[in-house]
Image (cartoon, rainbow, N blue to C red; front, side, top):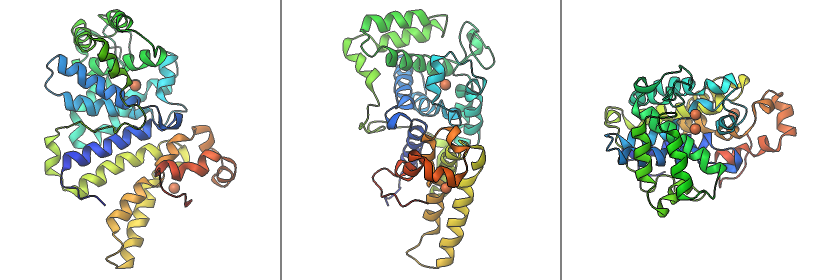
Length: 316
Ligand SMILES: [Fe+2]
Ligand SMILES: [Fe+2]
Ligand SMILES: [Fe+2]
């Protein structure tokens, strides 16, 4: 158990975990949230935006509302979001973030991260100055990551041409200018490779959320892990608040031990997190009877390992 002396560090560790859970599909190699975070922060710095670290966090969590979808929200992006459930992911994400007070500034940014400058975005069809610069930065970072996945060998010229096409159509021209300053040298193409598997997600990142200083550390961890648990529990209709109930039972059972070796708080945290590997299963699979699912689905049998990579599979 590490000594948690820095609340900002706890916040960063747990939201990185949230982002990883969302990206658990594709063998954990997706790192979409991390790339959008790095790109959003980079564009914000070029624009002398006052909140690059908040934009980093918003980038990590921008698709959090897509956790209940059949496939990763990225795949809907390629279909232009004709699926209504997929179109709801921005509003759903905003609602989840609303439940953690220090994230309130991020709520509107995440709600609008698919709005477009020309008014053809969703969910509200906002346009031009009705869209905040933060939502525009997230949108452009999102598009850049999708483009660079589709064109992994894209040259600097092709990236800049892509950015020019987004000016006054996807986002405000000033945001495109910031992104073009970010992509001004061949070395800058390395930014599109950020979040590669194995790279520590937050190795050099510092964030600043002064609002969390008023929250005691155990309470902070509980609130953030509660957010994390929602990602597993929203995945299947039969799972509503399952992790919260397991956490409650773990806490009560651990307390009954009356032993200094059994920490009820840690038991509660483990209960909240025990099923996060469920995120990698399709909604279709989770509709099956749990007993049938346990015997037929290899991914289900592996979900404890996805919840705790490196641990031994103990089942439930
Ligand atoms: Fe999105
Ligand atoms: Fe996205
Ligand atoms: Fe469970």
